[in-house]
Amino acid sequence: MAPPPSESARFIAADVLRRFEPERTYAGTLLNRQLNRTQERQRATDLVFGVVRNLQAIDAVITTFSGRRIERINKKLLAVIRVGVYELLYRPDAPVYSVVNEAVNTAGRIGGKKQTGFVNAVLRQVDRHIVDRSRALADADPKRTLVQNARSGCEFDVDFLPDPEDSTAAHLSTCFSLPSWLVTDWLSEFGFERTRQICFGSNRRPSVYARVNPLKTTGSDLLERLAAADVQAELVNQGSLGSARPCEMIKITGPHAVDRLPGFAEGLFTIQDLAASHAVRLLDPQPGWRILDLCAAPGTKAMQLAEATQDSAQIVATDIDTQRLTKVGENQARSGLKSVTLLPHAQLSDQPEESFDAVLLDVPCSNTGVLAKRIEVRFRLKRNSLQKLIKTQSALLDTAAHLVKPGGKICYSTCSIHRTENEDQVRAFAQRDDRFELESEELILPSAEGFDHDGAYAAILTRRS
Image 1 (tube, one colour):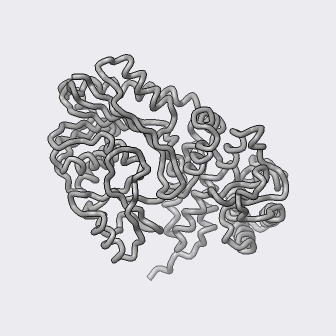
Image 2 (cartoon, helix red, strand yellow):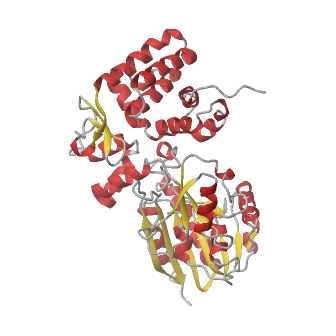
């Protein structure tokens, strides 16, 4: 019998992070290759994602208190230091001696014993300047305090953050490790308080939600099955999440392999964020409709369409990515739904014009509403990249317009909260194609409070009869 995995979460995290390149690699992919080496899988995951999610703030602390620019620190040692600083800043329950000692040991294994002194010195220096690792934000100096959540932060004894009064965007950008231009746009659109809440929502540890398949079970029955397997869960109150018709959703607490949860293999539920479920609920599809899901992969919304229509609509699912389209088939097989038909994208042109009652158009977007989950986006998204996305979205809207019959609907949705991809996009479409009118639209901003959720936008464009 093989011995159990013995590496610590901190060692695994440092090993992953030294290979991580923000603009080229995915932390989750690198991490999954290493998780079988440790029994502390959840902790290793938190360390890796926590460092990446807060990288700009962590590096600001390292630069300030080590007196050395990040580029001048050996990459292997930098990964170890980042893990240690993350714990000092954002995990006040982690004992300082444990954080420092294991970082020194890890540095010795990864970089050689000659390097351990530097790692020890940096972490000790950071700790020396920390006044309170869990300071109430209401009493903290914002120029000295990195926020951990809406209530507390880690306070230092010197000013090292931009002044929020004089440089609001720079302050929020540094504290929440988000692009300055994006924060600037949010401030212009939403004002300070809402932008601050967006930042918290974008940096939260996202909860896991299950959308109950009403054709196979109920929320209460699924809760009983989960409870019998010692899985903590609760029904979600969606009263504050837009005006769309609700569907039963369950919040699952604690680390669990989703595909091993009771009911997953039988298709009793699908993992989906609260905000992501909003588009189909706003569309309110009906049995008997012929519906095109134009950007369907991986099939989460296609299955939601089938569930919402009692598996009695005709749902055609296609995607330009052939490999990802197979995921739709896998989800369909698991759910047992019969009303979804896969259509290779090359055959989309064979569909008769004006042949669908509705088109669900979940377009490629900037992902600015889902930064808590797609953590690498903050490093890769540039202002000029929005223009290419906007052109793609516009072209897809035009494609959808030809396929909708008179009286039919386009449900345009994104996981972005950027006006140019949402409100501006649908108004520009309605202006150039006067057969359509904007029936309704709703923007959901990311939130870290209560039943936390991502951001999303959905609009219903109705073709005049």
